[in-house]
Length: 248
Image (cartoon, rainbow, N blue to C red; front, side):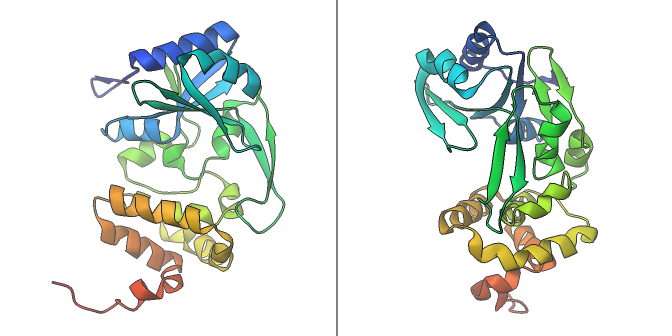
């Protein structure tokens, strides 16, 4: 795949993973998530997120075990994490659908489906800028929700109504806003309504999103302004109390 004269960087390690999955019978191998977003933003790709069709988690595990250290992340989500000797990591997941069963960000019924359509798989992504899918077997981009347009125009918008199922997605928007993305004001009410569930997010996940804001933001203040617009800044009184305080 060529974007503005730049080929998507599939390394030797990545080709080894792809080859093993093909031999095992994978019917579809897609690069998704942050690795694809970063490529379209002109940023380096250090790790790969892949969604695998036609194989279950045991088959994926067996297929790539010869390549490095393999572990299973999450008993429900069935994400296979592969770490190569080179240090490059791969998150290999199976398409899944989710049903909200409670107020917490972990209260979901998960059903993996290796035969799911790409549209349904992409619809469960949080933001459109994370919804693109690069089909490595056919060398083509699958873009159901305006992935390319929204990256080019720095637009941050939910992929589907499922956004409201998980309050953690608001915090994720904080560091995306810090990277230059802007969410239209029509979504503020949705995010504000999720504030009452913020206390259900684990401290570890809160820390993870704030660390990404601190380490990835190009304009950190934009992330703070995002939280203010979302009605979440009052949850962080140490920052909220700085409103109106002049800075040098």
